[in-house]
Amino acid sequence: MTTLDDLPIRDDLRGLKPYGAPQLDVPVRLNTNENSYPVPEPVAEAIGKALAAELRDLNRYPDRDAVALRADLADYLGHGLTVDHLWAANGSNEIQQQLLQAFGGPGRTALGFTPAYSMHPLLALGTGTGWIPAARDADFGLTVADAVAQVRAHRPDVVFLCSPNNPTGTALDPAVVAAVLAEAPGMVVVDEAYAEFARPGTVSALAVLPGHPRLVVTRTMSKAFGFAGGRLGYLAADPAVVQAVQLVRLPYHLSALTQAAARAALAHRDALLGTVAAIMRQRDRIVAELRARGHRVADSDANFVLFEVGGDRQLRLGASDAAPRPAAVDRQLRLGASDAAPRPGAVDQATAWRTLLAAGVLVRDVGLPGWLRVTAGTPAETDAFLSAMEKLS
Image 1 (cartoon, rainbow, N blue to C red):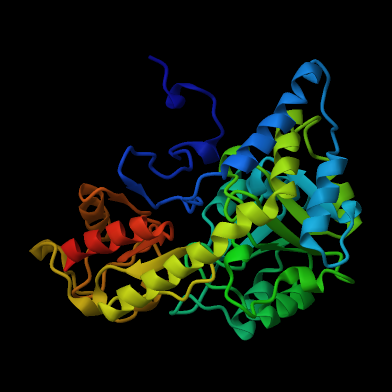
Image 2 (tube, rainbow, N blue to C red; image 1 turned 30 degrees about the horizontal axis):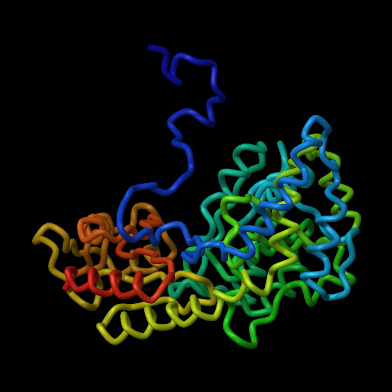
């Protein structure tokens, strides 16, 4: 049987595995930051009617520039944006891939502050863009001084900023975005996939788009809208940026069905976004309960929570789990270095992940030693998760 090693695959792809979280049939799935609430029946019916209206014309190509959809997205975002400021694609991943195709590529670099969204370096790899993993501080934060110093040192062509950040969940100080935008020589992409879940007072980078043609804000309908299966992401930027990504987009990249379904969803956005407040309450409940039990938990402006399964709590999942290490490694651990050993008393997050899975709860191991990420879902899912967490004490 032929294997990848037998094919003339690119050398930089050898030994890699496809991106993706485990898709397992378990009672409670809280590992991919989906919206746990199903699409309301009236909205599902409206989407169905919109799709049915397209069926007879499937022999024709769709609107290759998705003008009507982009107009609807501009109306949703506000901030004085028009159809010329918006672009849409199959999820925000394709949006970011197109940005790297246009502004990255061979001989160019992209920089991100890790731990952050793990697809960004993979998108860089796929587009031949050099990847620079910059660092966050020991508490996963990012200060103006640190951000500016690292951008100044590397001079990347593209900078990725995640706000709220994935996997930590915390939104960026707007001063960081402004400082990076002032320092960076190239494009600055602010990934706001979880913006609708941010705590009150959080400022979106959309507010500073005017007058900044190198700033791009990317969003998705997969999370707050509960439209993950529809695959619709989009960006807001100066019209010149939209013109740039149109140079690299595939022809007719958004199907007529995707456009119709997304427009119907946007027309019923009040119903779809009605679950956001409930999800935020469960997120805050998870944060408060885990902290009350002694876990270290990152502040979250998203629909998920990053929490430590060991460390100060001295959890006992087996004698072999506790491994002493130099104090200097603590900073590496919080920065997500792959070779960082657990702190004294900390448990291996893979062991904790398996323990939760055995209890019927699937969470995400994001590769941070001693830490796991859980999606905030329904009250019943939170009950199940918190109950399963008792098995770790």
